[in-house]
Amino acid sequence: MFSFNFSLLVYVFIAIFLVLAVLMCYQESKRRQINFYIALLLSLVFTTIISYIIILNSPLREARGCVSCGNTKNESDVCGMCGNLVKRDDYKIESHLVE
Ligand SMILES: [Zn+2]
Image (cartoon, rainbow, N blue to C red):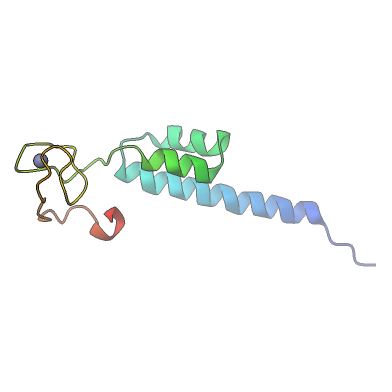
């Protein structure tokens, strides 16, 4: 008689979930000013979705900045300090990930 072991399926699911959480924390901690282990701890204490929102609120390591006013922490097309448009001339940041 075949009996399906549900606990094995749960362990496999948890393993996949942990691997994805570690990869997400590794990827985002490279780009943003947050320690990898702090990001991993957040995703274990809270869920991965909530920790991802927290991690997304931490600033970028290589922000674009603003030439007009010297705001080094600007990350968007329009500077939050002076309101001028910021030209995209730095190709160090992977632009498809920023937007
Ligand atoms: Zn500015």
